[in-house]
Image (cartoon, rainbow, N blue to C red; front, top):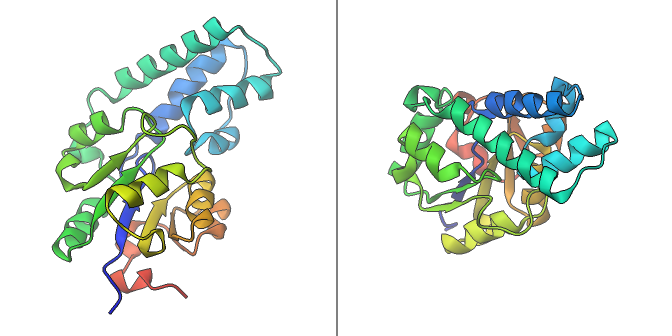
Amino acid sequence: MKSIPTFIFDLDGVITNTEKYHFQSWREICKLLKFNLTSELNEELKGISRDKCLKKILDWAKLEISVNKFNELLDKKNQIYLDKISKINSSNVISGVYEFITSAKKQKHLIALYSSSRNANFILDKLNLHSFFDAIVDGNSVKASKPDPEGFELAAKLTESDPKNCVVFEDSEAGIIAGNKINMLTIGIGSSKKLSIANKVFKEFNEIKFQDFQKC
C-alpha cells in the first residue's frame, strides 16, 4: 500500500494573499529607481528570493548600483513589506486553504512549507497556522532559491519523506520547475498559463479532491 503523501505548500499566493503586498512594496522601490514595475513583469518575481528579484529589476531598468545601495534597497523593501502585513490575521488565509489543511491533518498527511520569503514564520504566526506545519523551510534555510529544488529537498528531509511521495502546491513557475526537477507531484494553484508545466492545475483549493494526488 502506498504511503500517505507529504504536502508541501508555498506561502504567498497559495496560503495567503500577501503577494499583493510584495508587488506594492517592489513598486515603491522601483519608483526610487525611476522604473515602472508592471503586473506582467511582477509575475516573473513570484517565488524567487528578494535579492534575485532586485537583480531582475536592475537588469530590466538597465541600472548598476553599489553593493551598499543594493543591500539598502533590500532592507527598505522588506521594511515596507513588513509594515504592510503588520495587521494581517486569519481572515487573510485564502478561501479553502484552512479547510484543506485541517482535513489533510485528520487524514495523517504530513504538512510542510517551503517559501522563499524570509518572513514565513512571522506570517504563519499572524495567520494562526503555524501549529499545522511539521516542517518549515524559508529563505533563511537555503542557499539557492527556486527554481533550484534545494528547499523542497530540505522539506522532504525534515519530514523524512521520499521526494517522489511529496505533493507541491505552488502558484509560481519557479516553484513548479523546482518540484518537477526532483519528481514531486506538482499542483499549480491559479489560472496562469505558466502553471501548465505542473502535473495538475486548479484555480483554488475548493476544487481539489484528495484522489487528485495520484499521478497520471
